[in-house]
Picture 1 (cartoon, rainbow, N blue to C red):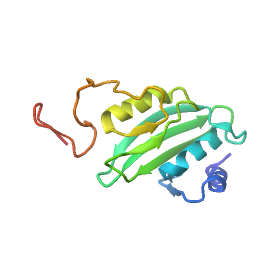
Picture 2 (spheres, one colour):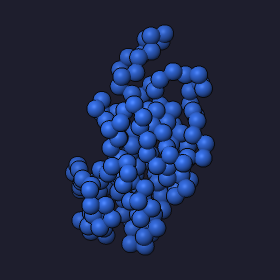
Picture 3 (tube, helix red, strand yellow):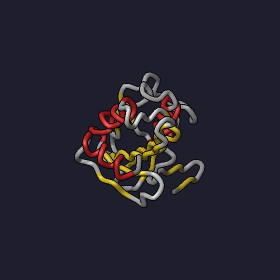
Picture 4 (cartoon, rainbow, N blue to C red):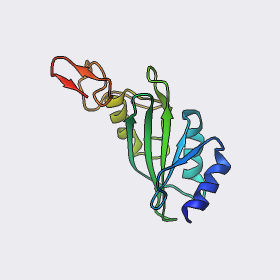
Length: 153
């Protein structure tokens, strides 16, 4: 399957999405948090896509909004997609968990929560994974300041 066919399949599931970047390698799709879970479930369970492996999950802070970024691949169909969930609520960033769909997401979501402060709704064990429990703030956000250690981004 090529990126154009994959794009058509995604558009049949989520009509309010945006495709970005150079599509020569991986198809990049930007979705809203409320649409993400529906798309993720479809891509995982549909036989045409069968995205059986989440090989990367991270986040990006663009000052005005946050992204969670998911790299999914199908080992059977030999296709890969990058899903970017655009989160505009910086005060209470929330996106649905996908650790029930891909077990690899469990620790990745905890890391993103720990370093960016993005909460994953329905995650079974959402707590800090790298930093101390009493750590204040989220070090990978662009507005993070640490006066004690003089860390500024």
